[in-house]
Length: 168
Ligand SMILES: [Fe+2]
Ligand SMILES: [Fe+2]
Image (cartoon, rainbow, N blue to C red; front, side):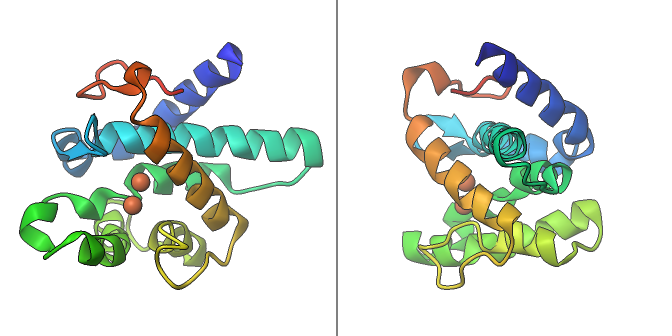
């Protein structure tokens, strides 16, 4: 288990290097998320869990996924939430709108996203939003995001910044 955690962290850092070096992602490490963490730290953990799920699906069921795209999109799935207090009237509007805003910001960093990329980011809040994911990668992030939203509350994951990334 320690091995897969380490491998996930190193893989996310490698595959997501461009995103993690971006100004927008650095900003995301300054905004509090889920009370105890930051948007960047939460997103890093979501990307790690996505990698673990993909690894599990392949090793156990031989199901192949686009895990590289999933990692990149997981790092950016909440990027549109930056500045939430100024952008959204309430939590409900934030919940509905931030996935769409994240797609726009992600495209400004990565260039045009394909349908799978838009599905991963744009539908990650399902079932809180109406449209379910259309791809396996999109479905995986809905699970990883909810798992991390809960485990972000655990003391072992409560770091204010993404200085020494780890996930549980
Ligand atoms: Fe979100
Ligand atoms: Fe999230």
